[in-house]
Length: 476
Ligand code: P53
Image (tube, rainbow, N blue to C red):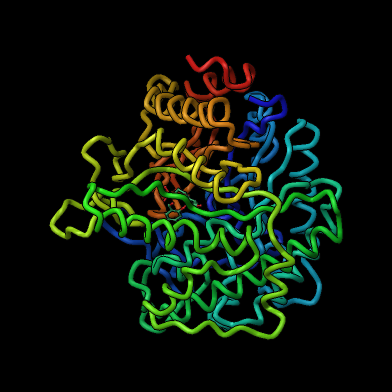
């Protein structure tokens, strides 16, 4: 592994920060979502109902714990920390003329703390956390005016933090927009009659148009960022699922190829290559979609290609045309159960080799540096005498790190960092649960927000510290 490999961890403001109505912050789309579970979806309420619980409001309370949290990251030897800036902390409604100084100051404090700990910040500009006002007023990214509002926000944070932050990601898992569940989360779309992100009254035309606006916004942000500081490294961020054909039946193979195009490549191709791929036309036709392009859009996309490709990787899936096969449960992306793999309690199939496979697929296609910015095992931890023996998490990460090392050392993939998800426990995006934990550090809070919010080191904390200190050599 290269010397300056970015070992670290990853979070997002909406799931980690809390302080949802402090320091002048406005509500974001996640602030309007109740808690759920595997069985019960999270509901979107248009106003806050005092009788319901909104887990993102306090989240892990990083807002009040950032110093101690960064000290813990430093103790583990983190080289990098991925976090997001909450848009509605800077522009509470998204439309203000001037930014909220208190919000800007908070991130100054966080970045200063990170820099003092020699930890490189990697900042997601938009991680499922549009100001809710933009959903109410414009129906989110359906409205092209969001491009300018987003660029104003980028201009503010790029200028303010240009000497503190080098790595930026324009949109978290931008391809969430190709799935109906991503309509609210990724695109801020809330259609009449919608109660949860799973039952979104789904209009593919809206989603794909909104996604087009995000592509334009991302490309403009890349250009703007490079103008403000030519040293900025600005990346895209895509959720990658390693899909396999379920059988050697050519129909399954073809279906799998199409699934990679639709799920994994549609967005990255635009953001890396600067134009829609040839298969986009087929996808639009199949969904009866017509993308409204404005004059100059082709040039904008071309001029705003990203410097590196970042992605999340949790699992693999099988693709088949045979509808009678058993589906994987709890999996938002859908797919068929793989008889060779085990799954976590939420039905996500654990597949380390799928990571090596994915890294090779991506590098062959894009030929730019790759960064893994999410990976990990969501699991229920048990506290015994103040200790958390999370051997299952160590096992998951060990196998995934082995796989990425093989991709680098044997296959020669250019990988610049590994930042597993939820390095300090945080609220699950899918279910809103706290008990679905990913962290090296335990946060004492339950699914209803009861607890001290005290931090404690899990076994994986000491293990990961060794991994980083040995630059990935010592995985025992
Ligand atoms: P959780 C599902 C739903 C929402 C976001 O997911 C998701 C996914 C699955 O990929 O993507 C990312 O918390 C996301 C994070 C999220 C993480 O996956 O449902 O970027 O915000 O927490 C893990 O276990």
